Image (cartoon, rainbow, N blue to C red; front, side, top):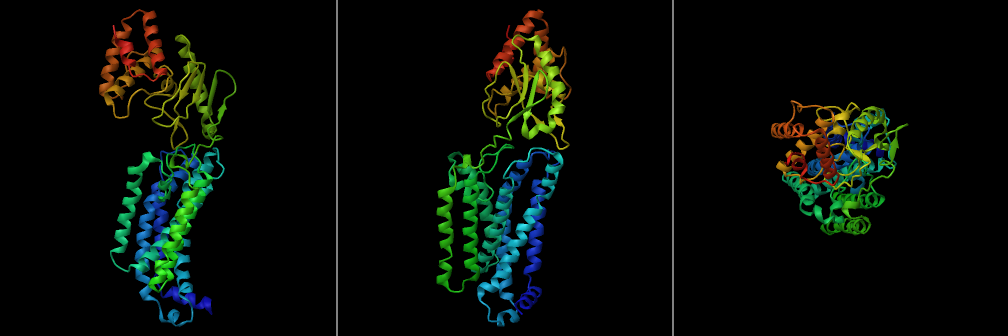
Length: 442
C-alpha cells in the first residue's frame, strides 16, 4: 500500500521529472567542464581532481535549482498523499532521496569518459582515486537536499537566483581573497582542495573533514525540509554548527589538503646508458623519450661538464628548481593522443634549447626579461645543432633578438663560442636572468 501511494504521488508530482532533468544537466555540465581533448588520459588522478574542482561551479547551480524545486513542488502535493496518516518526514523522503540519488548518479556518470581514457592509457592508477569521486557525489547530493530545504523555508521566486549568485561569489571570491592564508576554512568551500598537480592525492583528513561538513549541511537541509514549526526550523542550524566544528578540527591547512603521492613521482628508467627516466605516472611515454634524449646528450658533449642523464622534472610551475650539472631536468607535456608534446621542434630540440637547462629566471609578468631568456635559450640550441636561423614560428620580438645574438656569436672564434654557450649554461643552471647578456656582451 505504501509503495502504491509513493508511486501514485510520484506520477502526480513534478519531482521525478525535474530531479531527473537536474541530474542530466549535472552530468552534461560536469562532463563538459572535464572534457579536454588536449589532456592526456593517463593523468588519472588529475582528471579526478579537475572533476572535483568543478563541484565549485556546479554546487551553486544545483543549490538554486533544487531551491526552486522545493518551493514549487510542496504546494502541489496531491490530496492522496496528504490524506494518508504519514509523517512530514516520510513524505519528504521521496523528494530528498530521489533528488540526492539522481544528482549523485549524474555526477558519477560525468566522469565516465575521463575514467575510460585513463584505463585505455594504461598508466599508473593511484590508490584512493575514488575518494574525491565519492566526496563529489556527496557534495552535489548535499547541494540538492540543502536547496530543497531552503526553498521550503523561503518559497520566493528570488530564492534560487539569490542562492546561485551568492554561492558563485563565495566559491570564486573566497579563494582569491584568502588563498595566501592557507586557512583550513577554505576547504569548507565545495570543490576546493588548495594547490594540486598531476601528482597530488587527497589526504584522509581532507576526505573526512569535507565529508563531515557535507553531511552536516545535508542534515540542516533535511530539517528545513521536514520542519513545520518555527522553533524546529531554528534548530536546523544546529547540525551545520556541529559539522563546522568537527570539520575545522579535522581538516588540514589548505596547502596540505592534497599532498603528493610519492609512488606517482617515483622515477622509472629505461635500460642502458645514458640514463633516461620519467615518473611512474608518465611511464607509458618512456619509449618515445629514450632515443631523442640520448641523441641530445651526445650533442651536449660539445660543452665542458656535459650532462649524462635526462630525468623528468616534477617541480610545480613557478617554483625554484635546483639543477645539477650532470642531469637535464625535462619538463614533460603529453598531448591527448598520448604523444610527447614539443614546442615548435622535436623532443631533441626541446632538450638542447637552453643547453639542457630548466627554463626559469624571471617573474611571470616580466615579458621583456622572458623574451631575452627565450632568445638566449634558442641561440644555445641553434648553436649546438649547427643551425644559423631560428624557426619561422618564433615570436617576432624574440626572433629579432635571436638574429642579433647569432650574428655576434658566429663572428667569434670557435673556442670563444663554446665558452660563451658554456657560460650561459652555467648561469641558466642557477636560474639567472642575464643569459642574453652573457652571450652577446663584447
